[in-house]
Structures are given as C-alpha cells and as structure tokens.
Image 1: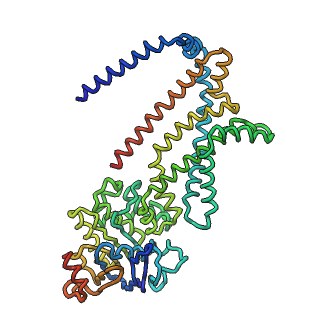
Image 2: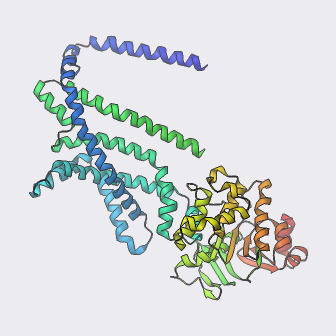
Image 3: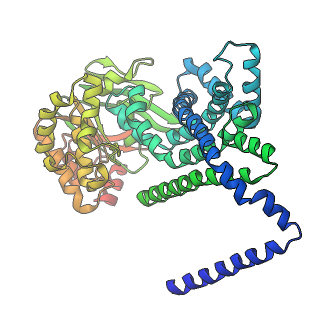
Length: 259
Length: 240
C-alpha cells in the first residue's frame, strides 16, 4: 500500500516537472527571460560577492536576536503584570505591541532609518546599520512579546497555586516555575519568527547597508541583468529551508510529547 | 492552632462557603467530607490564602491571617498543601521540585539541603526516584513527591485536597500509607477526602460539608455510626 502510493507520487511528480521543462521554454519570451534571469555567466561572476554580502545579513540577524529576546520578554512580563500599581507599565506594553505590530516593517525601517540619522548625529551614531537594527528589533520584539505572553498564559494556574502554596514569591514563581515552561513551549513559534526576521533583514537594503539584496541591486544596474536577484533568492533559501524544516520538526516533537 | 470563624466565600453570585466555623488542634487530623461542590476544596484554598475570603476570619496560632493586605507568603510557608493533580513542576527533577522553595525562601544551598531532602525521600520510599522527572514517575510516586515537597518547608500544618482522587485504585494505598506515617509522627492535618474508610480509621474529627456549611461535625464514631442529621445519613448511604 505504502509502496503503491510512493510510485504514484513519483510518477505524478515526474510528469509535472516534464511539463514545466518542456512547456515553459515554448513561451514566446523565454529566450529573453532566460538571458536576463538565468544567465550562468552572470551568476558565476556575481555569486561569490553576493555570499560575501550575505554575511552582513547574518551579522545583523545575530546581534538582533539577543536584543529582541530581552526586550520581548520584558514587554511580555509588563503586559502580564497583575499588580495595580504597575498598571502604567502594562499600558505601555499594550501600546507598544499594538503600535509595532500595526505598522508595516518597511515603514518602521524608513522612519527610524532615515529619521534618526537625520537629527545630525555624529559618526558612528548616524550609521544605517545601527538604526536599521533598531527598527527590526522594535518591530520583532512586539511580535515575540506576544508569543512569550501566549506561552505564559498557557501555563495552568495550578502551577502558580503550587508555587504559591510553598511560599514562593510572585517573582520567583514567574522566574523558576512559569517562564522556563512557557519559553520551552513557544520555541517552535519563535523559530518561525526568526526565519521571518532573517528574510526581513533584506529590508535594510532600502536605507543603506550593502547586504545581499542591495549588492544584487548594484550588480543588476552594473550588468543590466536580473540573475543576481535569483542568486540572492537561492542564498536566502539555503538558510530558510533548513530552518523551516527544523521548526516543523520541533513542532512535531512537541505534539508527540503532549499526546 | 487553626481556627476558622464564620468564613464565607462566593464566586460571582454563587455562595460556596456559607459561614464555616472550625477549630483544628495541634496534632489533630480533621477530615472534610461531602459531595463534590460542597466547598471542601475552596475551604482548603481559603486557609492557604490561595483564595481571599469575603467574610469571617482565619486564625493561625491566634494570628488573623485573613486580614486584607497581609503578605501571604510567610503564612503559606507555615502551611503545606498538596493538590489532587499533584502539580509538580514538570521541567524539574523530583529533587529540584523539593529543593526549589527551601533554596529560594530560606536561601539555603543545594548542598546544605541534600541530607535533609535525601532523608525525606528515603522516609517515603522514593530514594531511587530523586533524579527522575515527574513524567517518569507513576501517579502515586508523583503524589508522594508532592507531599515531600510540601514537607521540606517544615510546615506546622498540612492541607490535603483530595490527593488520592486522581490516582488509579491500586496506587491509592501507597499515598494513604504516607498519610498514616505523618499521622503517627504527630503532624497536624486537614484533609478533603472521599476515602471514608481511611477517614473513619484515622481522623480525630469528621466535618460533613453540605452546600457551603458544616452540616455536622464530630468524632468518626458519631458521624459514621450515629449521624444526627438526615442529610449526613443520606450522603453516607450513597458513598458507603
């Protein structure tokens, strides 16, 4: 039964691939598209530099992640507070997540990336790398904060009751009982946010940093050919596909553990 | 040692406790019996300040612990509580579960706590389970770890909220044995329970709760053999 369905899957996939490979080149514009998007010569010439530029994407990603984690956790805790004296903090958390989840990322990148250096700050404080990072961190912290909060709220009240009955303070209960469980529970959801973040680093190309998308744009203008964009897409895929598979694996494992 | 005076508690418009008065002397074992929804669990949660009471007062050694605005943490350290669903922390080993509160509250190190904790685990037949995670333990073992966790804070009084109700029948015995052991060591205990035989055998006092009131209380011989109230008789005829 299993073997039969494998054969069917194999045959149908082969047919579809064959159809694409034979039919697409029959399109009238194919020769031109091939020349400007899938040009092997241009690809070979530009790809190494694109990979080099992608190191910037990775660097921006890597220093953004710890900042996002810390800020998101702080916002999530602020929103979760039940102490009436801390209500202003809670209000701030609500406003923050509402605002930064409500504005397109590219708009935040423009506003902060052009706006703040426009204040005439001295070097290095006018760097688009810094303000681009700030824009990404502010936006993603809002999303990740909501993920953390959903994790915190998913921990059953009986865990807090057990901790309280032992005389643990509220902050110790949060730190040792609720958060460790909550954070573990939302790892898969946060993995998906990280994948989205890695892609959105490319948005910084609009405010200056010569990362992979910007570099591809430079080559496009230089060589009058779109192949560098295809190269950039391949580089992104080489990172995001394994990461997506890993996130799926984590989700599947978590589902198994809970059943 | 523990005294409740006219304790009342409502959830929304639902009056769950309707003027409960009860005293528990040092070393006594008091069993709360009654149908589900009669207020047993809520009463225990009110004693441990997990629920604020609406009216009345709760005294622990003469101190009014139900006063609004009182910091509940120091009070809860003196009162141990064990829950129906164990409520162990699933991301910690049994030993870490037990050590967390003494470490954080009393500021002791793991090394300083280890002899005492090991002794507790050994006393309740769990010496080889200290490094296990809750999901690697049977229900009976988890509940015994939960009892050890409460005892590690050296409470003056222990509250047990239907701690055998979630267990498979063959595991009930090992948990009741722990209670017997505590009883023989002189621990002051308040139990909400459906284990009538056990209550009849060991309790000093039985309280029959009905619709948020103590309908009848007295020594087991009176409640089980010569109940005065029709409601008590009706309840017992259904469960015995």
